[in-house]
Length: 424
Image (cartoon, rainbow, N blue to C red):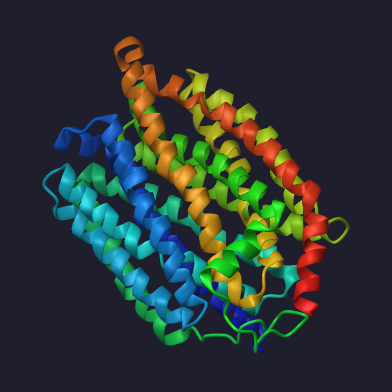
């Protein structure tokens, strides 16, 4: 087993990879209004670009890549994937129409499909179960660190140099960082932190692993709860810059600066605390890994209402901090729950299945549905159409809380059953 200093270094490097993942994914969000004006796009097309077109390839290819990662060198897969998605981000700066940008975004999705599942698996092999939610939450902070840098850099570069230069400036450094991953991260022994060693376990087939996951009601309820959570976070989040520009009249640099601080810091803090608190409370009752997401979902309704309906721009920006803080809480504990239900050589695939459901519902349909509803309401509500399109996320948020609770009702029994399978 590697020493603590090195495992923390690996976690830091992989968090950097996830940061690039979200910088490259979210850069389009802050650039939307400029691209829309330049290429003559609709909100529905923007929703396709930021959501469904990306998510379709991201989630679909994530499954076979994850199965490959459960059998081969995960570190190499991550390095190659980072190179691909960073290069495709840089190429986005050269597109001339919607279809070219669509193909470039598909390329980003193809590359990013090989990022998180192998990384989740590596982290779970470096950190034991009682520290796993915290470690996975630190890794997941890359989402909001990426959002911070993506919004900040994208907003300012777009303001002074244009959206094409923003894509290139963001994409090229990721190719360089892939070399850091390739040369400094060591592939760990599978299952080395598990109480029951699993290094001799055979990699189960695709159907067998799927049946294993679907045999747990915890997984089913949790996966769809995560999907409904991200429907709201991606749907609203991907249209937040256009909303602030249209309703509150803010420019690109101001939006990028404010959102980098409110969303980046708020989301990162929530993501870390979600895993940390879940690990602490989970020692007394493992159901806290699920209950914490219910509490976060209930709290989120307050700042979300302020964000949607307040006419005070400063209050709206402050509300984004607390809303994003609440949204960030669910991911680390949810990943820990899934990884604790499966064996070491199933973890990359388990993450891929969770992300398939989560991102198809959230990233795939969230922005697209919000964009379609906004276009439908635009003749009546004009620049306020996004405000009313956002309100549909109240229903998905309430649905998510119900499903988290249902998952908590089965988690104790499912966790005990999973340990019996490992011991046998």
